[in-house]
Image 1 (tube, chains in turn yellow, brown):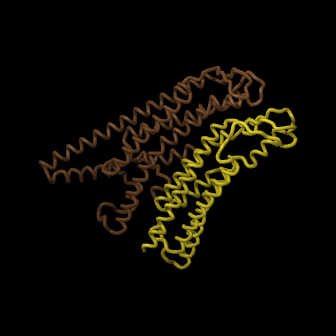
Image 2 (image 1 turned 90 degrees about the vertical axis):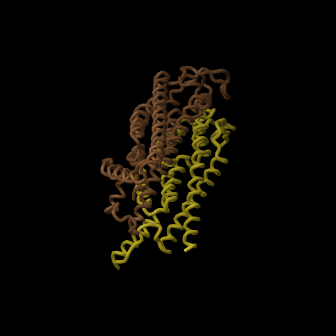
Image 3 (image 1 turned 30 degrees about the horizontal axis):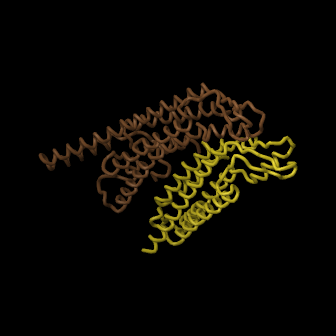
Length: 208
Length: 262
C-alpha cells in the first residue's frame, strides 16, 4: 500500500480532464506528492524523539508533545493529499456507469470534456467544488493547529504531570516553517487552478 | 510515487529535445538524483542525532542545530532538482496541445494525407521550431534561473560550500558560547562540492543548448531570407522533403508523458 494507488487514480482521471485539470494533476504530483515523499516526510520523521523539554519529570515531555501536536503535521498533510485527490473518483465512477450503460444500450459515449453533456459536466463541477472545499478546510485546520502557520523553536507547557511551566524545544523549526509555507503556497495554487477550471467550464457551457 | 515517476514524465519530453538536452537529462538523473538518493541521503541521515553540543542544557542542541541549518542540504537539493526539472513540463504541455489540435483536425477530416491514423499523431516527434522553439527556449531559461538561484541560496545560507567541524553557538537557552560538532563534516563537504560541480556542468549544458538554439534560429532565418529572394518555390519543396525525412527518422524512445499524450 503506497502512494502509487493515488498516482494511478489521478493518471486515470487525467485522460478526461481539461487542460487546466491536467496542470492541476502535474502540480499535485510534482509539487505536493513528490516533495512530500522526497523531503517533507524526513523532516518530521523523528519529531517526537527530538522534542525536548527542560525537565526530568517522567511523562512531562510526552504530555506536552501530545498537547502541542494533537495530530502530527505530516499525517495531516497525507490526509489532505488523499482527500483533495479523491473527488476525482466521482468522475471515474460516473464514466464507468456510462460505459456500462453504453455497452448495455450500445449508444455513443463522450470521449473528452469538450463533448460532455449536462450529467457528466455536473459531476465534474461537483468534484471541482469538493476539491476546493477540502483545500480550504485543511488550510483552516493547519492555521488553527499551528497558530497561523508558525512553528516556534520554544513553547511553554504546564500540563500535568509537569510540576510548573516548562520550556520545551521543537526540533528544526525553521525548516518546518519553510515547508509549511510551501504547502500553503501549493494549496493556494491548486485552489486557484480549480476555480479557474470551474469558471472556464461554466462560461463555456453557458455560452452554448 | 518517487523520483522514478519524475523520470517517466521527463522521459516523454526527452523525445522532443535536442542532443544537448538529452545529455542534460542523463546528467540530471545519474549524477544528481541517483547520487542524492543512493549516497547523499545516507550521509545526512543522522545529521541531527549526531550533532553534539558541549552542554547538558536541554534545548541548547535543538536551538543551535536550527540556527546553523535553517534548511537541510538534502531538502534544498531535493527542491532544487524538482524546480529545475519542472520547466520541461512546459514543453510537454505544448507538445500535448499540438497533438490535441492535430487529432481534432484529423477527426474533422482536415488532414487528408499527412496522417494515416491517430496512432501516427501520438507517436510523431515534433521539431523545435515556431512556437515550440519559444517554449523550449523559455524552459531552458527558467532552468538556468532556478539553478543559479539555488546555488546562490546554498552559498548564502552556508557561508560557502565547506562544512566546518566545529561551530560556536550562543543562542538562548545555551548558558554561554557552546562548542557544537557536526557529524561527518569531510564527507559532507565532498558531496556538497560534487553536487555543486554537477550543477555547474548542468548550467554549462543549458547555456550551450541555448546558444545552439539561438544559432540555429538565426541561421534558419537568414537561409529563409536568402531562399525567398532567389527561389520562391524551392524553399517549400525543401521543407516538405525535410519534414518527410524527419518523420521517417523518428525517435525509438517509448517513454510517454503521463496523461499528456492521450
